[in-house]
Amino acid sequence: MHSHLVSAEFVELPKVPDFSVLQTYEEAIHRLFQGRGEDFRRISTDGGEIDQAYTVLFDEARWFVKIVREDCTECHLIRFENEWLLKKSLSRYRWLAKVNAQLVLPDRAATFILNRKQHYILSYPLVPGSTLRALYYQLYLASPYALNIKQKRLLRRAFFRYGQVLALSHFDPKLPAKDSAEMLSRVVRLHLPDRSGSNEIYDPVTDRIYLVDLADTAQHFGKSVKVSTDLQEWLESLVDIAMDARERDGFYCGLSYECIVNPLKQFTLGYASSLPLYKRKMVMAMMGETVTAYLQKVCVSDTREISFCPAVGIIEQQFHSY
Image (cartoon, rainbow, N blue to C red; front, side, top):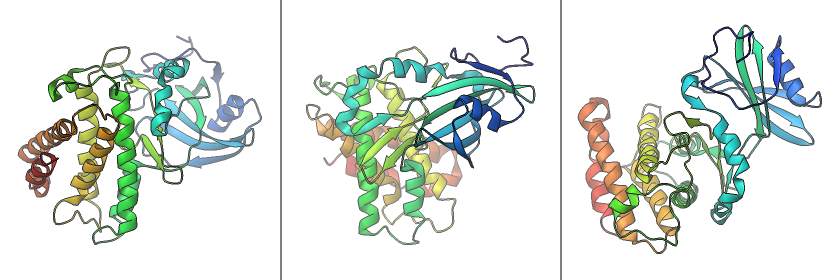
């Protein structure tokens, strides 16, 4: 711990260069790129972990730079070194290429003090595309009516592809499970923390998924994580995306709750396609049961979401018919 820190709240940071006390964020970026970074462009963030974000031109490529401050939301629970550990063992995850996916990991990093607060600055390759959450909003808020054929195709490709990716992060496709209980109790091959729809970027041009923000929580860091935990986190996030979108003007879910059923179905079909030796009906039923259990819990506890409750029966019917 540096002696000049006032009240650092980071639980632990990787061993990276320390720039000591600086006067501006731009100075930190300048130091990070050894004085050769150009065209700093500040971009808006959704708050949370990131205090400041920029894109920077360096070595004829653009980079995404994020700056985290010690008092960020839940920073005392985040293990940032997970990204560097993944980078060291990247060769273990070559199978991601089979489903056109890529882990986006930091290129360089440092710490510094600004306004008596410790900061952690990192750069990543800037990747093309939109987050699954942003893509969902873009499609469902583009028209007050049902999605057109082109929009449906884009939604189908994005969520199908992510299903393929998450399935391989969970299972070895050569080792099928005998039932859904065994599937859910297995330990994942690659734990992808904080899968919320905001940390999965889909590029429709290349049909590629980029996985970003791979720092882990103190709860899961360095521990075995079960498929049930990883899968439930993502499926609940998928439902929450639809529920959050409902609050926006122009959102139309569809007469048969397509806004939940369709992305869930495409994700599940993609998931099953990565596991050809696993029983497809078993995979579909497992997904349906996980989502309906969450929807039922939400319906009981939150009357604001009661309009989504009929989706339970539709999902139960459709996901047990495969």
